[in-house]
Amino acid sequence: MTSLLEPATNPAATTSPGHGDAFTDHLYAMSWTEQDGWHAPDLRPLANLSIHPAMLGLHYGQVIFEGMKAFRQADGSMAVFRPRQNAHRFQRSARRLAMPELAEEDFLLAVDSLVAADQHALSDDPDHSIYLRPLMYGSEANLMLRPSKTYEFLLMAFVAGGFFGDTVRPVSVFVSHEHSRAMPGGTGDVKCAANYGPSFVAQRIAQDAGCQQVVWLDSAERRWVEEMGGMNLFFVRGSGPGAEVVTPRLTGTLLPGVTRDSLLTLVERDGYRVGEERISVEQWREECATGSITEVFACGTAAVVTPVGEVVDEAGDWTIGDGGTGPVTRRLRTALVDVQHGRAPDPGGWMHHIPR
Image: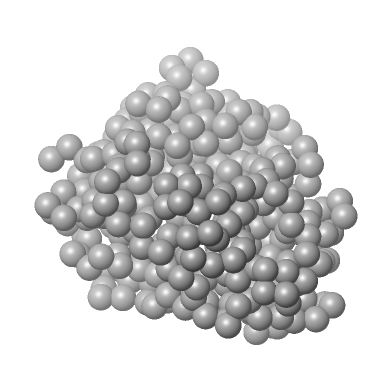
């Protein structure tokens, strides 16, 4: 029930593209039906969609997506960071929402086709990348409360700068005790559209409190730290070679981030102690007060590695370390970015090179 009409608005990438609207020129599309499975792959000009107002995904939230980045390499070629991991998570999201899975090879063909077609949009600025957004939605025009019988897969892209601006600086965060992002048995560990709309009200409250992001707690006890916005969190204890870097355990309510998984490898490779544990708000505050926790950072495809400097909480605010970017955070960000741009050895087939 979806067709493409006149070209969509496509602002050109600038020297400061920001995040989210400097779209590239093309769109990759595939369709699914019960009779034909996935079929009709097509790379075409980016254009607006025409949908029936009864499109099932629009009403019942049968929509999933992913996010990953393509980077310019030193030799001028293009490579995408760990797209196979995104393909597998896309499949897991599809299973959770009773949608058809897209084969890894089809996912990668879409990535290869779009990046090859639109790589010209990316400058040599190392702070810029091409952000890729795969999307699948139930497209059947039917308001029966059941899974759709037809689906559309789309892949679009935009040129991305910094998620928090053009420079890396610590962000302030607001601990939300009133709202929860996810609950046990829910969809917190997959990327479906329904996870994000309900989070906007808490994000607005955080902004009203002078913070850039919200920190989510568990929904049962409202005590255990889970995520920051749509990003995973890491805590650094100590300093120097003996520092320990830990992150909240995956409990089924946290998204298993590709960047999170990558950093766990890089932390261990760089010789730091590494772990996964539950950390309460009270523990976070107390360990910062005693100097045990020296740094905190968030990570994700968009945020890369972003330091957290201040925490606003109903029981009292506090500063992490000196409020600046710590040496472990800085080192890990550099290590990750160097791998993504081909300036450091690939830890294990992370970079998917686009055929020339």
